Amino acid sequence: MKTHLNTLFVTLEDAYLRKDGAAIDIRHEGKSKLRVPLHNLDGVCCFGWNTVATTALMAACAEAGVSLSFHTPHGKFVAAAQAYTSGNIHLRRQQYRIADAESASVQIARKLIVAKLNNCRTVVKRAYRDYGDRCSLRSENLQATAAKLENSIRALDRASNLEEIRGIEGEGAVHYFAAFNHFFTEDSTVFQLNGRSRRPPMDPVNAVLSFCYTLLMHDCRSACESVGLDSQCGFLHRDRPGRPSLALDLMEELRPGLADRASVSIINRKQLTEKDFEFQESGAVLLKEDSRKKVLAAWQERKKEEFNHPVLKEKVSYGLLPFVQALLLARYLRGDLEEYPSFMQK
Image 1 (cartoon, rainbow, N blue to C red):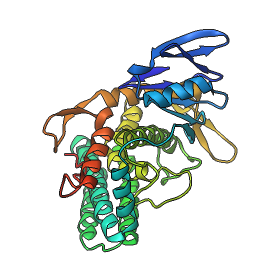
Image 2 (image 1 turned 90 degrees about the vertical axis):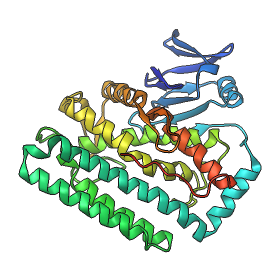
Image 3 (image 1 turned 180 degrees about the horizontal axis):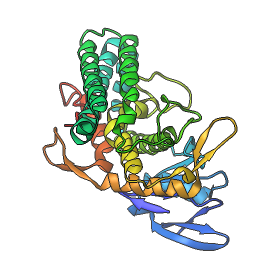
C-alpha cells in the first residue's frame, strides 16, 4: 500500500477497507495494516478480486470528495463508488452543449491530439538525443519517426471533423509505437513491443504500458470530477455507457510524458525482468502482484518530478498535471479562456 500526492494504492489481495472515525483503515486477516486520515486523500485505488470496502467507508469517501475505484489485480478498471454528482451545473450544461456540437468538439479534440502527437515527438527526440549515436539504424528510425509525427501534426490543421482527427491520431500512433523499441537502451528478447495490444496485453512492454495507462486514467477521472466536469462526457471519445470519455480525452495529451516515459524508464533501469510477468497459454502477458508494486513505486516517483508548466509559468509536479489540465479545460468551457491550452511538453 502506497500513498503519493493524496492517492492511496491498495494492492493487498483480500484487503478489507473500513471507516475508522475520520480515517480509512486497511485490514488484512483481522489486523490493521495502515490507517490514513480521509482529509489527507484525494483518491483510493484498489487492485484485487476480493477487496472489500464497507458502505460506511464508501459514504465517507463520497462526502469527503475522495474517489474510490476498484480494478482487477492486473489493472483493468472495474467500478468506482461515488455519490450524487456535485459541482457547477452551469459548467456541466456547457460541457454537454459543446459535446453535442461537433464543430465545437472538433476545436477541443484537435488541441488534445496536437498536444499528444507533439508530446510523442518530444519522447522520440529525447530518445534520439540520448541514444541516437549508439546505432545508425536507431538514429535514422527515430529521425524518420519524428518527421512523420510532424507531418501528422500539420495534417490536423486541415481536419474538419472528429473522424478525420481520429484517423490522423491513429496513423501517428502507428508511427510512434513502431519506433518504441528504439527507446530502450539495450536489445532484449523479452522487452520488445510487438505492436500495441490491449485487453489483454500480449507482451511484457504492453503489460507495463497498460498498467500505467490504468493509473493515469484513475487520476484523470478524479481530476475531471474534482473541478465539476462530467468525466463520462467527452469531446474526442464519444458517449458510451460506463466509459469515462472525458478522462480518456484528457489522457491523450498526458500519455507520452507520464505513462510512456515511466514505462520506458522502468525497463531501462532493469527494475523488471522476465520473472515479473505471467505468461498465459492464451498469449496474454500480465504483471505479477509483486511486480505491480514495483511499477507503482516507479509511477509514484515519476509523479513527484517537477517541471515548469508552460501556461502557469511555475513549477508543477507530474502528479498534479491532470488536475491542472482539467481546471484549465473547465475555465475554457466557462469562457474564461479563448482556447483550451493543451499540455505541450518540451
